Image (cartoon, rainbow, N blue to C red; front, side, top):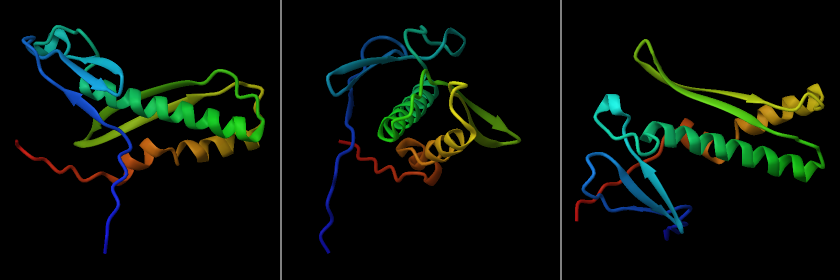
Length: 135
């Protein structure tokens, strides 16, 4: 059976002289990641978990906007707060989505359903195989 590889995203990192600060190339965009001062970093950019949460928030907002546009709904501004926490040894992400008050209960319920089906949400929930090669 032939398998087809569809590359969804690619990122590249070359570490520099900074202790923990890292510059990541994602497409044509540069992103700086670092650890906060309290963890020995220089706080030059978000920490890795913050970047993970940022990806979830962005995917959620973009997907909700696409869905609302398709339906002709006036979505208005979307506000998303995400937190990564460890509770009794279990890791969890808490996501709060604030939508415009002009949306009715049925629209809100559908958007909540859509939020649970965003690509990054689904990836995080099911887990993903990570194949590592040392070159």
